[in-house]
Image 1: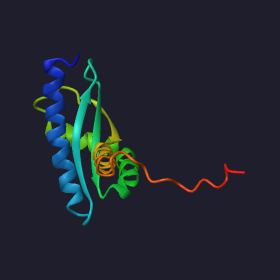
Image 2: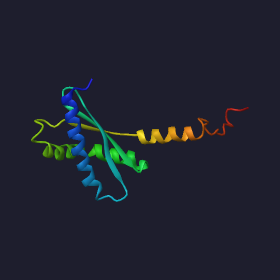
Image 3: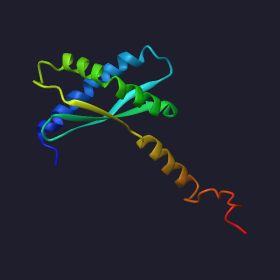
Length: 125
């Protein structure tokens, strides 16, 4: 169960991370990175940020780059929240694939739940 303090800190971190990623992705045309959710541990030492990337094909590459530069992002975040937080939590970034999941469900519903059959000639003898 998430406490009120955890929820407030998660919202603050989400807002500030969104601004950081907006500034960074303004330089790279054609890629949009948004922070869909942030979860903070009960002791407030770890924050897990879930990023939504458009186009989704570049998602894994973007997450790897973000994880590689997570110390720099944490430093920028610390500068923005220095008056609200005494200690900035350690950041871990994950890809948020909920939009892809929703798209898959929509496609299944449009096809009445029938998946297209794949050619399985290896299993037949």
